[in-house]
Length: 165
Ligand code: SF4
Image (cartoon, rainbow, N blue to C red; front, side, top):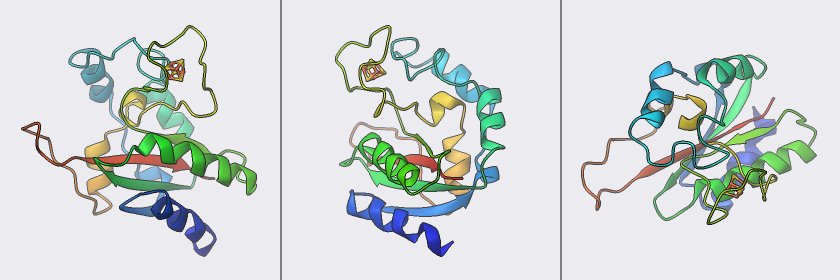
């Protein structure tokens, strides 16, 4: 695991509160996550990174089966996890981890209006929840905090994942 220490340090340099290497088979996927995207989120169908364009829970489960380790990254509400994830994905790729793939949080806001073809393919990545990942169960199993936010002034915890190898 020492070979991944540089990514933990890098995530902190980029503004993460914390991060840790987790086994990829501890990432929880569930069908209900996508249904919550479809019914209850105004972003459904509006971004190339969101359902129904993003991987289904079934596709994500299959994809995860090709990986052993991933970097789970925790940020607070002052930091955009979607800025950190593509940087670490790219650095891991250039280190030789050719399967490196980043997954962020929330809709992609790189463009005001999304297009038919992505204008920022190097940076735009789907959110964990958009891929059918149960973020609550996944991060809690690794000791990270997360709660439902009952008021606008509640402090948020956000997460991203970089599948490494
Ligand atoms: S970068 Fe632009 S075009 Fe690509 S998914 Fe994000 S909003 Fe859509």
